[in-house]
Length: 81
Image 1 (cartoon, rainbow, N blue to C red):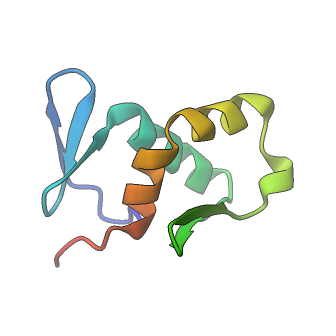
Image 2 (cartoon, helix red, strand yellow):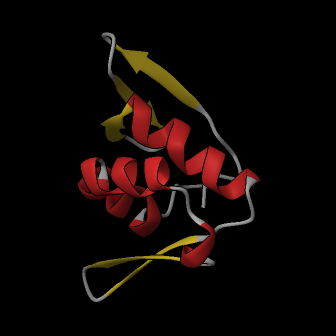
Image 3 (cartoon, helix red, strand yellow):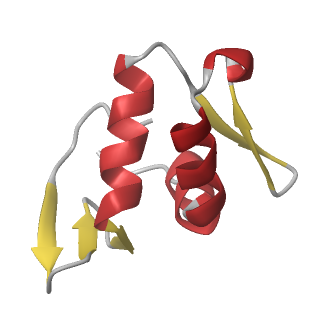
């Protein structure tokens, strides 16, 4: 997913990832936090999948719901080398 995080901040809330994907800053921070916690984000058939979902906190679940569109874009994205 976001192994090579090369990004620049556009305004206060938008981040441009390497290759031109624009997403909400909080989605990037949440994705990194989830990865550090042992969760993997994947996209399949337009759905966002989070591994080890039973270990997510209520706060994480709410954040995932709020940022789902951005997390789905991150999980689907393949940055250029």
